Length: 283
Image (cartoon, rainbow, N blue to C red):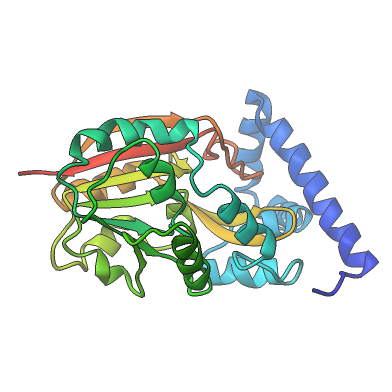
C-alpha cells in the first residue's frame, strides 16, 4: 500500500486530533448540550463536519465508505485486521461469559450454530475451550469471502471438522443458535430484517459486543488507525422492537465495558460501552 502524501497525513492527524477534542468536551454535560445545539444549526454544522472529516455521520454505508476511502483505502481486508482475528482465535474475553452462561445448558442439544461475521471461527475455538460441544454439531461461519480460506486452513491445522463457512445468510435458516458477536454494527441492515428472510428462524439469538444508540441509529466510520470501516450504532429501542415483532423475547442484556464508540458530534447518542443481548423465540 502506497504511503499517503504529507498533506494527507497532516489532514488525517488533524481529523483525529479534533475528533478527540470534541469527544473529550462532549463527555461533559456542558459540551453534550452544546453539540446537540450546534449540529442543528446549518451555519455551524458544515464547518464542524469538515473539521472531523471521516469521523462525522453519514446517510448510508456507501457514503461512509466513499468518504473513508479518500483518506485510507483499506478496510476489513487489511492485514492488521486479519492477523488480529487469527491471533485471538480461542481467546475468551470478559464479555463472552454472559453468552457462555446461557449457552452452556443448551450445549448438548445444539446441532447447528450460525456465526454472523465470525471471521476465521474465533468464537467456536473460544467457546469450545469452555463448553464441550457435541461431536456432530456444525458451527457455520458467514463473513467476507477472503476470510474463508484462512478459516479453512486454521480448521485444518487444528484438525477441527465441525466448522464450515457459509456463502449466504440464508444458510442460517434452521439453526438452533444464531450469534452475532462483534459484527452487527458492520451491517447496515437491521437484524430483524436479515432474520425475517429465513425460512426457519433460529430459536436462540445472541448479539454481543455491539455499540447501540439510545436514540436514533447513527452511521459513521470506525477509525482503526491502519484501516477505516463504516459502522452503525443501531437504535437499541428499534433493535429490540424489531426482534419482538419477529416473535422473540429479550431474555437478558448486559454492558460490554471492553469497548466504546464515540461519535464526536453526537455525544448524547454515542456508545459509552458496547452491549450484549440474548433473545429466545416464543414457544
